[in-house]
Image (cartoon, rainbow, N blue to C red; front, side):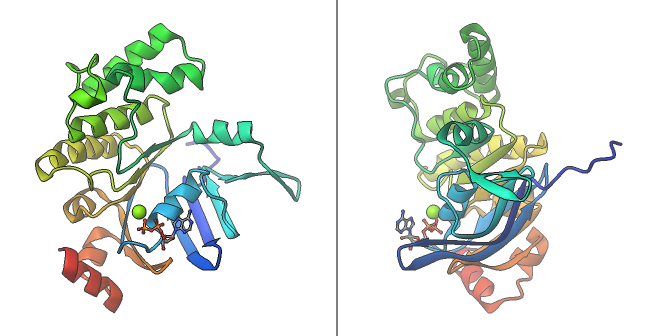
Length: 258
Ligand code: ADP
Ligand code: MG
């Protein structure tokens, strides 16, 4: 054992975020340890996507503290002074975090393999041959070994989403964020995507997942967090939170989705 303990992968302490007069995050505190899967559930408009976007440097928080793998998001600490990160530094930090969206956002003019190889080559300077080998292995792993040359328009939604997951993994992220990755899919395509996510969790990936898939949350999550109105109403193990919620608001939400 090394003497140093690893910092939490995500540590949010009373995070606030407002858009104009609308306070979207009203003091969110949350810890995700390395290797853990945390699922965030909650009604539309409760701030789930905004929170993920803050973790991924896409939004700046207004108050509180937010760090990823022990480093403050958006700032560099030197002594007791904080400096805002420059664009290039932000880009470098974001390269360590994979994000998968509801709408897959693949490049339409590129094949599956080109989509997966693009960022490692452009952002990380990985050699093309090495990127192609890794990319092909990742597409194989998400069940698309026979679709390397297919364009997004030739793939189903579920296949496109699995390309998007492979594309995120190609950057060898230490944290994966998923924002309702199966919400835009036809029901019969959801299972293949959840299977890939489940395997990723079993391999030890740290994951923060916004989802309405309660079965996935129950079986895969270490922690389930219920958000409503910009705050975390309740958090616990799936058994606690899903089967035995304490808060009336959680019970009310679950009665509608379970
Ligand atoms: P959720 O993902 O839980 O549905 P969001 O984080 O997307 O919730 O949104 C929370 C609230 O913040 C909503 O009321 C939404 O309209 C508002 N919001 C989100 N992004 C912006 C933005 N860029 N500008 C203004 N309001 C926003
Ligand atoms: Mg959302």
